[in-house]
Image 1 (cartoon, rainbow, N blue to C red):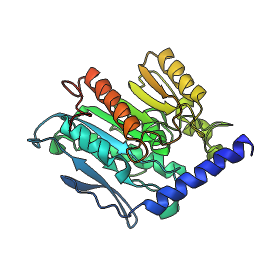
Image 2 (cartoon, rainbow, N blue to C red; image 1 turned 45 degrees about the vertical axis):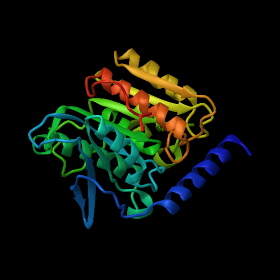
Image 3 (tube, rainbow, N blue to C red; image 1 turned 180 degrees about the horizontal axis):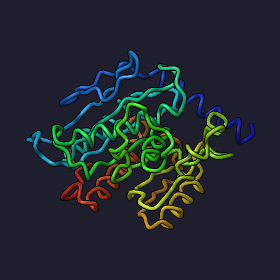
Image 4 (tube, one colour; image 1 turned 90 degrees about the vertical axis):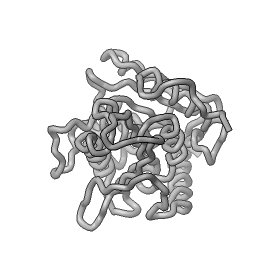
Length: 290
């Protein structure tokens, strides 16, 4: 089996597994749920997890997570464990829904549009949500990592109903085996080949790119190590911090709690330390505490 067929095979299995196991609409017990965007009869929601004693007038750092699934499927529950942990550490955390092909018959463009809309919603409603509009991070895995990275880099795709005077660029990025490269030979190129130059995060890096942390397994069948190394190089060229961590033997999705408790804890510990270094959290990580 050649490399292209292998990648397609892995992607197909990954998407089918996520769709088969996805309970949709998701049942998430959160401190609040809001609709951040309505498109036709589709209501896109954000699920919030708040620290103890959090109040509406606070200015608490926040992070929003976007699920993976190849722009085709997936569920916001993927990052619920990460969200609950970071809320326990003092951040307002959010898991976001966005449109995907299997449910909404959409293209990858709509995924990026929804990601931008979600960040804009958080920033424009920061006062009532008790979050700091200048400390909003975005995170995600695989295609969700693409959505998060695209909010910081891609400028060509915005919902017509969005107030584009509100920035959709997050203040930090937390990325798990993210799709950075959509160019020839990159992930999903055939699906986005008509507009890949405007869609590929790694090809739209510019000055002002927020600090980022990226995690990748060395045996990832979809995202090459060289792509993440290139992201780091290009980010540093424009003066941005780009922290990367490679996990020997890790495959695509290695970081999920359901896949590996050890990888989940280590990547979350490093996420905690990264956010602490930015002033979003205080104290030592508590990932390993009972």
